[in-house]
Every structure is written in structure tokens, then in C-alpha cells.
Length: 399
Image (cartoon, rainbow, N blue to C red; front, side, top):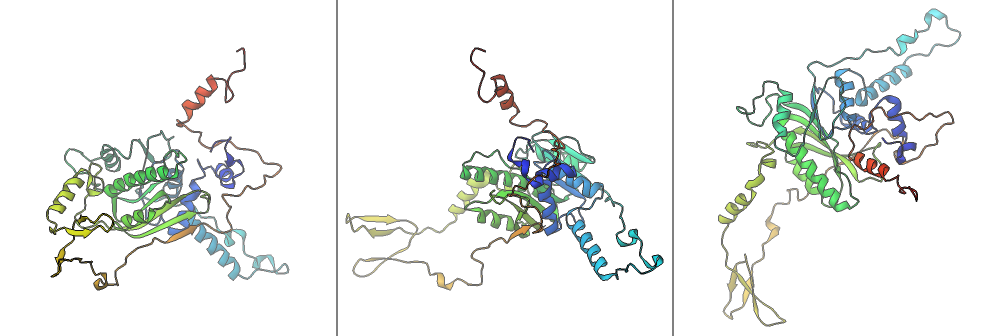
């Protein structure tokens, strides 16, 4: 939320400062909740890559303070609208005693905080404190992060006597993390996918059966493979694009509902997704039990020589002609899903602001300061060096 960025005329950028959010990304989580009801029956949450803390701020205000945003606020607005439409609007000639009082039409409800709320936020960058939030400065890709997280979730956790599985699992794991983009889209998508796998593997250690997982992704050419891999662990997988997320951006959010781990699966950062360093051994064991087939001789029409094609059975007739046996796929059952495509869902009210539009500022507009300035941004050192050299254009001659 820098003042010098193009976000000056972004409606969500200004609205975040007016409503007290640390970053405009808070609206992304709120719009995801409007569509998928993420906060229903949720009391224990882990927020990965949380800096500057806008998503943790949403969790704090919804779960701890009991304020209504997202799906709950939308349902309240719908209920009040229906009540207003169904009630008989009194006319001006009706007596004063027949008119309903203002508080009867739209009663003000008190916030209802939830009980036994536990929220843990993790990031490499320092996070300014939030009410009721446990913050950890750690790397989610490092195996040592799991014991720290489990200790924060359960004070009685002992890493020497317990495994890397939460004794008190959480209901929801969210991640809004993304790498510093380079402009090379293939590289950025690959790095983001690796960060997502690290977040997923950590979520598998602490998520309870039936839990939810939400993470940012970069949509690329082979993103369908990622969806299929997530479908192994979750019953429903959606790709969501909040209205507050710019349409010009390749970012989207993967929303996974109803965590159902495979039987016998145990997650650990030392063995990502249950394989880790054992993958070469597993492949060698698989190849050892594979059936051995004789090579096939295929004649090269250009050179007249015979080339060997492995892993094909060879048969020769009475004239010495080799025939290649091709697998017949017609006997395969057609009721199997050859390809699974994740549903794409647009989140947010159509009447909401367009994140790609530049709205005209009113004449009396006053630019507000960010709610939480960056504590230790990665570009801080670059700014200091540029100032030491006289700014963007260098020092004037003779100085």
C-alpha cells in the first residue's frame, strides 16, 4: 500500500485505509468468504505468509472480536432487506403510535466473539502485533517450522516425544504468499507452485479431517496438474477469482473444502507430501518389479539399418517380418474420468468496485496514511542506497 504506486486511484486501496485494513488484500479474503463461507464453525486457524497481516486482521475481527464481514454481513443485509420489503410501510397520515420505532426496523446487534479461538500467523518478515494473534517469524519451507507451529497450537507439545502431527488440529489454513516476481512468467509460476506445495505440506500436518485450505496460485499452462494433486487430499477443489483481484493479474486462489487424507498418509516437511528423498528409491523398486520385455527391431527406411525399440514385445512371421503389438485402448472402461477440471468461480458482488478501474476522486478527497506502514520491506535497503547516491538521477555535478 505504498503512496507512490498506481494504487492511488484504486478504490480498494482507498477503501482499505478508510475501513482500517492493513492492505487491500483483506477484501480478497472477505469476498472468498462470501462465496464459500470459510469462517463457518471455525475457531482454530493458521495464516501462512501473513505479512503485513491483513488476512490475520480479518481473522481477528471476525473470530475474536465477533464483527460481521463477508458471508455473515451479506446474510444480514439480505435479511434486513426482506424484512423491509415484507413489512407494511406506514403512511404519513397514520398515527405516531402505529409507526414502528427506528430500532425495531434495523436493530443493532452486538458483536459475538467465538470461544476458544486460536490463530497463528507465520512469515519471514516481522508482523506488527494484532489482538489475540500468535505471530511466528519462520520459513514455511524449513522442517524446523513444524515443531514451532505445533508448539504454538499446543503448549504441551514436546518435539522429542511426539511426531509432526498436531494433537489439536486446526479448522482452516490460509496462505496469501507469493514470491517477488521477476517478470519471467514461467519462472514466477514455478516458484509460486513450490511455495504453494510448502504451504500445502505444512497444512497437511496441522489440518483436521473436514478442514479447509485456501492459497494463492499463479495460473499457468500446467496448472491443471496442481488441481488434480490437491484433489487427492480434498473432496472439493475450486479456483476462485475475487473481484478485488485485478483481472490483469494471473493470480487466483485455490479453495479446498473437506480435507480427506488418504489412508495411512502422514505429512512431514522432512518428506514433502510423504515422498521426499525416498523418490529415487521408490522408482528403483518399481522398475525392479516391472515385467521385462524383449526389444523390437524396427527397420530404418533411410539408412536400411535396424533400430532397437525397447519395452515392446516382438513377434516374427515365417518371412522374418517383425510386427509391433500396440496396446488396445478400446477395452478400457469409458466411465473413468480421463481429465478432471476444477470449477472456476468469480467471487464478489457485481455491484462492487472494479479493481482495474480508476475512479475519479471527489474534490474534498483527503489521502490517508496506511494503517500499518511496512515494518521491514525487502526494498528498504535499495531505497537507502538510492538516497545515498542522490536519488533516482544521482547527485548533481560538482557535489
